[in-house]
Length: 163
Image (cartoon, rainbow, N blue to C red; front, side, top):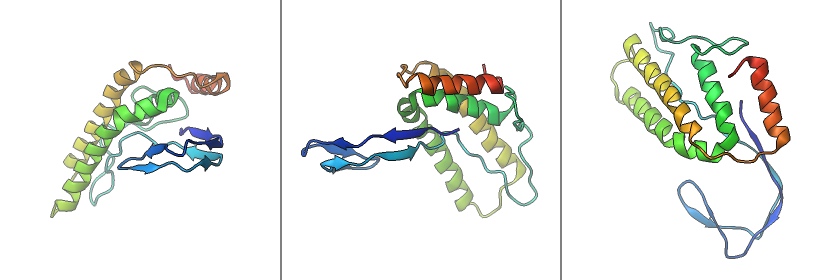
């Protein structure tokens, strides 16, 4: 699940700036209404390489929540993160980026293709990161996102059996 964010049109101070990921730029005087999709914030792990399979510890998701399923655990925390997405992203994104950059670098610098042991190790790291992230999400301050948004996710979580 990904959150759709609606940003209304707004007039800005001519001296204002915008902090982007890597730089600060001047703010324009007026912005239009925009729809944004906030990114997925779950770590990936490699699954495709010759002579390998999905990691042995991986449990697929189904229609209803299962705490042993990597997909459902990631989804549960992602849905929880939607309630305070900006703080959640600041908390987890650096960990995910470091992990993914390390994996990509090791794959690109390797003379061999990935073997099953390496894929299993990457998955266990991703799974551990997701589990550890849950306690960090519990410490984030709540943000008032409105009754409609919160009610939608409460009903959807109940329908899927998410605690």
